[in-house]
Image 1 (cartoon, rainbow, N blue to C red):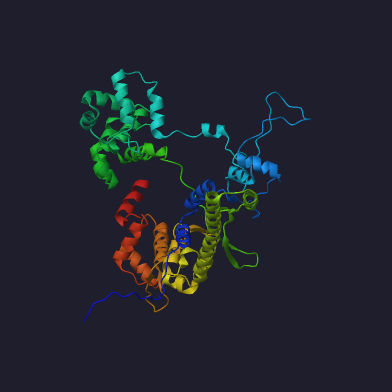
Image 2: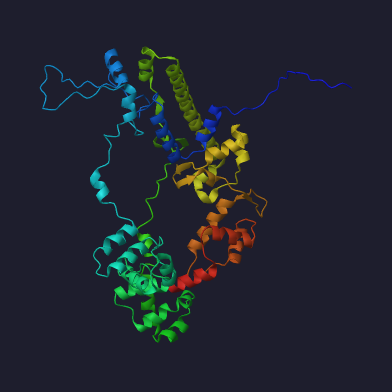
Length: 488
C-alpha cells in the first residue's frame, strides 16, 4: 500500500480561554483589598478609565474649549497671567488638564480627589513605633561602653516578635564575631529597657525580669518560677512545700505572676491588621423579610471616560498611536464589564447560599445546615470552580457578625433519630457553647460531650469531637480543669 500526504479540513468545537475570559476569572477570585490594588494599577496605566462618584455617574469636569484640550494634550502649560485680574507676584494660571488627567488625580473610591482626602500629617506623629524602634530609642540614653552598646544595637535585630532572645550568649557571640562576656553585658542592657522582660531566654527569665523591676523577686518567688511546670499542673501541695509558704501566700504569688506579660514584645503588634470589608450585606427589612445586597463600599467605581474619548477622537492620530488608543479603549471596556459580571456572580451565589441557610437567618450559627459547592452550583447554573472562586476571600455582614462565605459550606453529620443531617460547623458551635457554659466543678470530658450531642440527635464519634475541639482552640478537659483551679 502506497503512503501519501493528504490535507484534510475538520470542523470541531472546543472551549478556548480568551484573554477577556481569563481576566474575568482572575478578577472573580480576588479579595476586596486585592481588587482595589488591581483597580488602582489599571487607573494609572489606562487613560480611558475614570473613577465614578457615589451616585454612579462619572465625576463631572468643567467643559473645555478645543484650544484648551489641545494645550493639555501637548503638555505645554501657559504661564501668562490673565489680563484684567490682579495677581500676587509669582501667581500664575494653573496648567490646563484634560478630563482624564482630572480623573487620574482622583484615586479614591468615592470619586473625590486624593488631595482633598489627604491624611493629616500630624496623625502620623501619634503612631506608636514598633518594638525594635522603641528599644533602639532607649539605647541612646544608656551609659555603657561603646562596644557593648554596638553589640546591643545588633541584638535588637535578633529579638523575636514576642520580645525573647532565645539564642545563648555563645551562639550570639559566634554569629556577631564577639566574645561571650560582651554579649552577656549587651543582653543585660536590653533587659533594662522598657517594657520589662525583653531579651529573655525563656518564660521563667522573662517573668523574673518583670518581678525584679517590681522589687518582688524574693527567694520564695524564685523557687516558684523554677517550678512553672508544677504550677501549670496546679499541684498546690508540692508548691507549698517547695516554696516554704502557706496556701494564702502561694495564691498571692500566683496572682502576681498572672498579672505579668509572658510575651512583652507582642504589646507593640507586628503591623496594623487589615480591616475586613464585607462584599455582601444581609439585613432584615421593616416588613420582616431578609434582603441580601452588594456592599457599595466594596464595589469598585470605575467607568470609561467619555470626555477623554471625545478629546482623543478630535485629534489626529497616526497608525501606531491609533492602534494603542484602540487597545486601551477595548481593555477599559472589558474591565468594566468584567467587574460588573463579578458583582453579579457574587450576589447570585450569596442569594443561593442564604436561600439554603434559612435557619441560620433566624437562629444563628448553631442552625447551619450541611451545604456543598455542588449544591450551589446546580441551583445557580454555575460551575463548581466558579462558585469556589466567588466565595474565596469574600465576606458577608450578618446580624450575627461578619463571616466568610466559605463558612457556610460544611459537611454533614448524620442524625441518630433519622431526621435531617447536621452541619459540621453547627456541631462546632454547639461544642463551643457547651464548654462556655460548663462550671468549675463539672468540666466536660470529650465522652460527656459526645453523650450530650447524641442526646440532641447528633451521631458523632469521640475522636471527631476531639478534632473539632482542637480546631476551635479549646484545651482538653484536664487542662481546662487546671486552668480553672489556677483562676480560683
